[in-house]
Length: 199
Ligand SMILES: [Fe+2]
Ligand SMILES: [Fe+2]
Image (cartoon, rainbow, N blue to C red; front, side, top):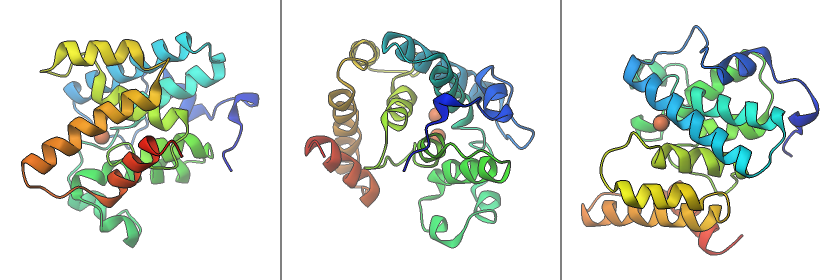
């Protein structure tokens, strides 16, 4: 069950992250932080359009600032902090579970937020709206190069049709991997299936 954090004050670390103040364990350079800030701003914009409560928008902003907090740490170093089941993931997906693990150890118990951060790279069929929004904002933030018009159109459409927008993003991602004859992680396929099956 997802906790209902809207009724309670966000954890101090989450409240600080929502303003861009990252925890001491973060390993993220200035370009990475700029990307995280753009993701946070986009999440805030969507949160306002969706008329979410203030406390929820705080969580959404925090997710943006925190999702890549360990993206610039060497995967080998992150692997050493992860439980064995996460070490089977592709190394470029270690930073999500590693950041979620740190947040949990620091006392954050917001399960939807932790799940969103843990799986933002590969996706999850169990995403709530926050996980979907984080995954989409990560792909659509305006600093990304190429396909700018495509991104702009999907950014505008997300609040009214989140699953359609995610299916479009996943379609593009999976199509790219297939054309490059690269593997598609089963978790990403399960995420895709959850979107197109409407379950
Ligand atoms: Fe990431
Ligand atoms: Fe990111």
